[in-house]
Image (tube, rainbow, N blue to C red; front, side, top):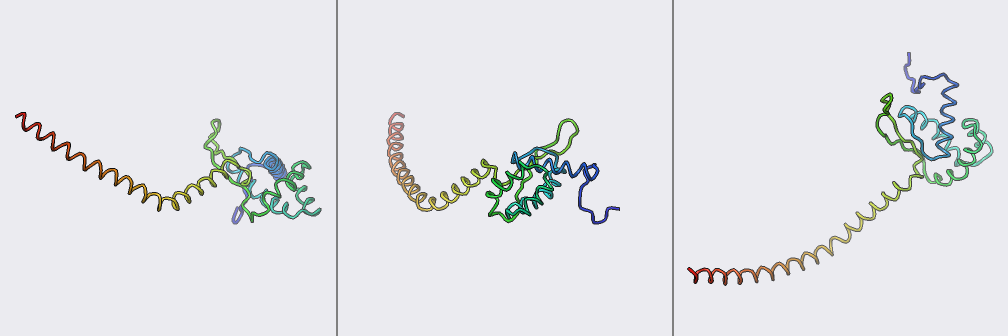
Length: 177
């Protein structure tokens, strides 16, 4: 029975599963995002997040521990160099899973797993959205009142002119009859 068991075996033996997760973790660190199934991405997240936490503490021991999981010198070098600098201020949650839909061949749920601090377009969009909403809230109170006053003043002058024209038109139509 599987009471209390939380790991997804992914239909693989222990050695095959370790090799799969090691290769996927190396690819994620080198390429910053990979496309895979949702089940593999969730297992990869559990596998790689502790490694990213260990990478913050750049000691010989932590490098050796991470290398025992990744088995790739280049990915360890990138992890402790570039990636560790970007995630230094983050307490956890280094990865993001974005669901993409189902794969055509076997209808498997596909997703994109990426390192959070490396999606520049999403980071820029969030900062622009924040600044836009703040500007509109702060600036709308004073500017909107001034704009409304000018619009109301122009409408009032237009309305006073319109009745004079309509009265003249009505007199002209009455004289014709």
